[in-house]
Length: 222
Image (tube, rainbow, N blue to C red; front, side, top):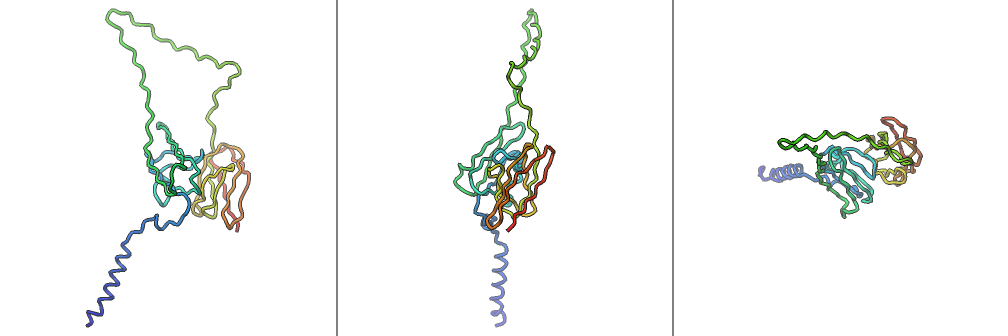
C-alpha cells in the first residue's frame, strides 16, 4: 500500500523533470510586435548601414536575441565591406515582421595586369610606353570631392524601445537600458528626436563635432 501511495509523487517528479527539459524557442517568448531582422551575412564583419547610417557589423545582429528591432519595414539596409560588392536590401519587399537575411557578399574581381607579348624572332622590340602627363581639369570644373570625415556617435536612450529619428528619418528603436547605439555622421548639426508613448518626447538640434567619437545621453521623462 505504501508503494501505491508513492506512485503519484513519482509521476509528479517525472512531469516536472520533463517540463524543465523542454526547450521553448526565443521567438515564442518574444512579445515584441515590431520588425525583427536577423543578419546571417558572409563575411560576418561587413558594415551595416540603416538608411545610410552606420549601425555596426553584421555579426552584432546574427541571432534572435540580438536581432535589429525596427518599428516598420519602411527601411533600407546596406551591407558593405572593402574588397566585396555591397548588397542593398529593401525591407519593404518582405511580407513578414520576422526577417532573416542570408547573403554572401561577392568579392570584387581584381583586374589582372596586362603582360606585353614577347617580340617575334628577329623583330626589334617596341619602344617602351611612356606615361602621358595627367591633363588638368577644364576651367570651371570642380575637383573630385575628398572622402568626408565621419564622427562615431555613441547614443544612449532610455527607456528601451523608444523610437529614434535623425533629421526626420527613422533610425531605429533604443536597445535595453544602459546599452548604446552607434552612428557614423559627418560633423554638423542634426535634429535628434526620441519618443515613446507615456513619455515626454525629446527633440533637440545637436552639433556633432569633428572628432573621432562623441557621446549623447537622452533620458525621456514620464
